[in-house]
Image (cartoon, rainbow, N blue to C red; front, side, top):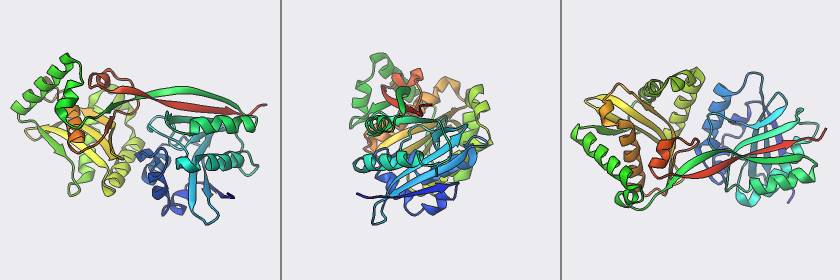
Length: 336
């Protein structure tokens, strides 16, 4: 197969490929909200490092069909996936498994042409364990005389969901099972309400409520939440609501929101992007844990197969029965 390769410099790519991007992302071997156009565009607009430059390699079949997108930025002569690293949980070349070898071949060939800006290292973070990129890239690196190393970058704990909530509870440690049941009963007794933000709700206000609770959770989250990250949450929520993948949840008591989860309901899984909790609001009710249990119950009741806590090994994820999956960093370097 002979391919057409297009190298696009700068953020014009998000308009240029707008009509094709998400269709390809949905068919990609790594198909998560982080591959979607809205997230990729918002991350670049609000969070890219100062002085970084954006460069996208689009690979097409001879009939013009888009086969793959490699969206990269260069910072200090190091090439990263757009979105790498802190705010994004899964990254990869955007292409189907069947075309991954073809697309990676074209992408690496392009990265090594004089048309591509100078670089000495590729640091490709957050590649899922199941991605064929982990097999293809080392082979191509060797063929090009590049040094290659792979390392575990972080863990993403995931619960594989059964078909009903009682069966899920039986999967847990007996102490944790009793704790969840007790906390759910106590929250019900206090008339705590699960609020699911719907398509007719005021989304901007709801996201602001979420961000308020996120900032109240810990000093670290408060300091992390700068204006750029706020903007990404708003843009991502709007796009996710538009395509039906937003699952923004609150626990509320007497009209006061106490805990929140910003989730994606995507590709038959619920992905927990971030959370918030007001420690001063009804602390005795453990509404953060109650909301997580409610979110898991919602996922099971709606036939989802996985509950993905995304990056990080916080202890509470394992109490809810999550098991680690790995994400990897692929490191390539030119020989000097």
